[in-house]
Length: 120
Image (cartoon, rainbow, N blue to C red; front, side, top):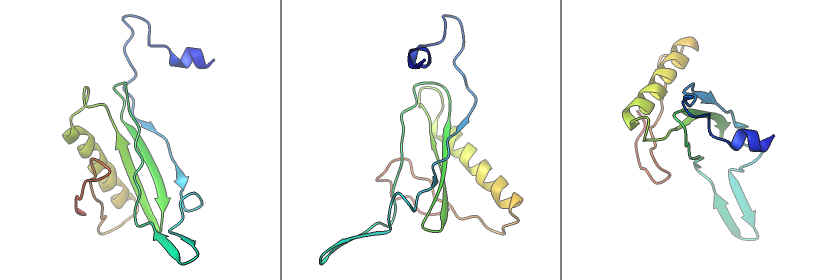
C-alpha cells in the first residue's frame, strides 16, 4: 500500500491542489514549557514545525500550545509565492476572528524558524 502512495500521478494526470489540513492537536503533552535537571533549567518560549511539500498543495497545521492557537502553512514555492500563502493564512485568521466574534486576532507571520517577524 505504501508503494501506491509513493508513486507520482499517471502521465497527464494533474497533481492534487486542494489544501490539506493536518492538525497536530494539543502539543502541551509533547513539548513542555520548561525542562529541568538539577540546577539546570531550559525554558521553551516557542517552537516551529515544518515540512517539505513536493506537490502544488498548501498544507495547514493547526495546533495549540501554551494557551495559544497556532496555524502554520507549508507550500512549495515552485507553485505558490509567499504572498499567496500568507494571504491564505490572513484570510483564515480573519474568518476565525469573525466566526469566534473576536474584536482582534493577533498573529505573526514566520517564514523560517529564525524569522524575527513581529505580531500583526
